[in-house]
Amino acid sequence: MLSTAYTRSWAGSEAPRGGTRARFYMEAVQDPLASAHEGRPIFKQVERVELFMPGNQYNMPVLAVTDVERETFPREYEAFRKRIEVSPDGTPVEEWPILNRAQVMELKAMQIHTIEDVAGLSDLATQRERGLIGLRNKARAFLDDAVSSAFVEQVTKENDSLKIEVATLAQQVKELGMITQQMHGELLGLKNAPSAIASAVPYMSDPLQVANMQQPGVQSRDAPATSLAAFVGEQRSRRRKEAE
Image (cartoon, rainbow, N blue to C red; front, side, top):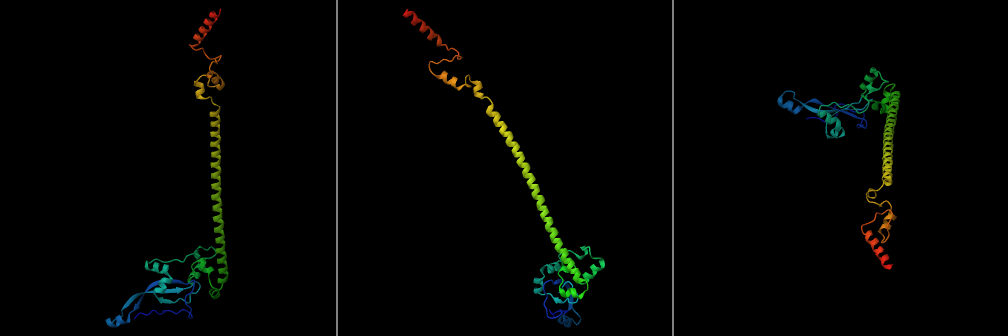
């Protein structure tokens, strides 16, 4: 019968707390009932999980996997089922310029894989190894500076984007002003140009003259004589002769 008890004990009676990592793997465990039935050792592969905390390489309990572990560490368990090695989130200690290779290997031996792990070390963990308190302070300062640098970079990018937008709007306003000025000039030219109707119809350029011509008995000096004017002249001459 398979046991779900710890195969290695957790120091004290504390349950795993925040910052705990998990490593799932398969382990061959002897099945007593099957071995007794077959008369020889029979082993079955069972899921195991090793729990550890960065900076504490002395207490790493191993448990038989249950739904509790699967739900507590879903990402690690899914990667285990897919046979994918899960790397801790953060900046690897290999990428920290202040560390040499020996220091990197020493930190990894303590299950410290990232700068975030160093910054999150507990006071108890820093007391186990000399130099960890100073290294933790440097890690926290490094992460704070990184956050500040990221903020400054983001603000700079936003300012550059705003400058580009302002320059684009200024160019659009300039082009719109040029188009407006051109349209204004064209409207003034149309306003001052002679009317096409006035150029084609006589006397249309002088409204008063046209109005006088339309009045009965008024003959413009410049207006040409009509064919009826001759009858008017003959009638006047006949009346003069009769009066004499």
